[in-house]
Amino acid sequence: MIVFQNQYKAHKPIPSSDFSGRRKFVQAFMMTCMVVLVSRAVYLQVFNKDFLKKEGEQRYVDEVSISAYRGMITDRNGEPLAISSPVQTIWINPKELKGVTEGELKVAVKAMAKAQGQKLTDQQKQALFVELQQQKHQKVVAMEKILKLPSGKITELLPSDTTKQFAYVARRITPDLADQVKALKLVGVNIDREFKRYYPAGEVSAHLVGFTDVDDVGQAGVEAGYENMLKGTPGSKRVIRDGQRQIIDDIENIREPIAGKNVELSIDQRIQYLAYRELQKAMEENKAKSAALVVLDAKSGEILAAVNQPSFNPNTRKELKESLYRNRAMTDIFEPGSTVKPFVVAAALDGKYIRPNSLFFTNGMYQIGNHVVKDVHNYGTLDLTGVLKKSSNVAVSQMALKMPPKYFWNIYSKLGFGTSAGAGFPGEASGRLLDYHHWHDFDRATMSFGYGLSVSAVQLARAYTALADGGVLHSVSLLKRDEDLDARRVFSTKTAKSVRAMMEHVILKDGTAYEARVDGYTVAGKTGTVKKATSHGYTEKTYFAVFAGMAPATNPRLIVVVMIDEPSAGKYYGGLVSAPVFSRVMGEALRVLGVAPDQEDSMPILLSEQGY
Image 1 (cartoon, rainbow, N blue to C red):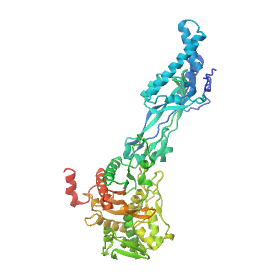
Image 2 (image 1 turned 180 degrees about the vertical axis):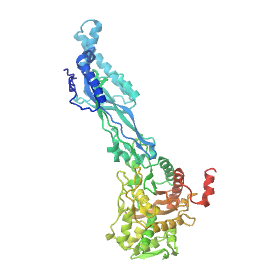
Image 3 (image 1 turned 45 degrees about the horizontal axis):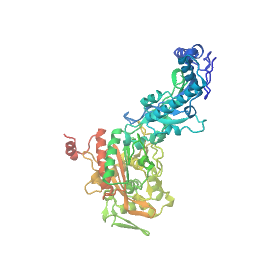
Image 4 (image 1 turned 135 degrees about the horizontal axis):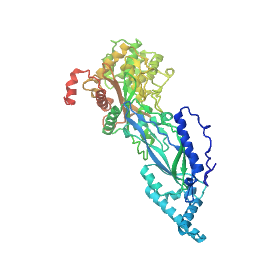
């Protein structure tokens, strides 16, 4: 048996006799393949010594790792959102690269002696050593130019401490550049294959998909949340290296790499794109601080789109700040304002604390202890439809005080407020819902019009499924699924349908969200214009503009929630800022999915827009 070593790393000998103890093979084909590989290894090590010794150059057997392919991330239709492509990584052994090694000198001396036909003198050897040093320096400079590194960068990686045997020079470079470096034949320079992550959708899906670091480990979004599923298991193989540590032949595969599993999201990239486009446009037009938008399938709870502004390009990520890659739709919370009023009406109806024909005398204000609840205008007497249509704080406060705190709290809790939506995204917000034991009358009132509790855009969209699907609340999922096994009833079918019909009036010309109308389809929704809280209380200058709605209202297929933070171009009402975004996204999304129109009186407008 022959053992090959270099002076820096000992390598285990490969037995030349029997490999049968290593693996048990069931199939004859696999056994045959192994016999061939073993025979080649024995042949190279024992019988073909000339192959392992050429021109005085020492060759040896080494074991190297084989990178595993990371699983793809796709949308529900198989469109790639994250894929891996093979790249090369350059790393050095500073101990070998710093100077001329003994092995290099021996090879050069023997070659020169053969050329001259006589042994070299000590003086000639010294001159050759100096020449080799100069050549090595020139090659290092050439490598810096190939890799476009600052002059002297590689020299900085060669410390006086010569025990260091590893340092990266360049990660994830193209095979062409790696070949140019390899051609320099520098001892101490090594090239490994890795994979680089590429995101075809760029910033459109960046917040959802996330990104990996230079070691291909997920750092944000789905890449981080599903790391254990996406990452593969590296393999290994035995190779022959020459005296310059370059791999010159493969001997055998020891362990095949196992590719990571693919992750199929519930996202429809077509809807994701149009949602991103419209939100970006609204963000710019309203000079807002940030924005988020969610599109849910009303029947299954699947997330079809979740976009945020501002965004980032996961393929570059230069000077990336955390505020840019935070998925606001999932992780940021806000007070939902009047968008929760339909739930208050539904709760009061289902609990029989009010009747379908109940009337409310608003008078513009409502005294509760030392506090006063106000409406924008004095709406006088309102029925239930009028309460939602005019968005009366006074009327819903009166309803809230009719309901026992425990019952009211329980409805909000069943809707998912105060607990994570459980969509499968890392860092999802739970929101805030104060325990009813700590409620005072004024707390009950403010919570009826969306203050004193906090939700994420996804949580609010999920809650709306209870109105969209006949009183059944759906769980939400970021992964594609066939059915929702965790759906549960919150309201009666009759109540959900009745409240949904009331919400259609919000979209009428004398409602608060006429801009949310969608040609060809009935729409049910609710606006929210929410004062932002500061350390000194609620401000009168900054707002969240919110709209939540569903369509077609007669049999909802989609739910869309739009939240725009601090619009500062003049408009700040949810019905003027967020409702138009809802309209454009909902209209296009319904057409993308082929949902039939259900509103005949606006069909001529729809047909003319489509060019018929």
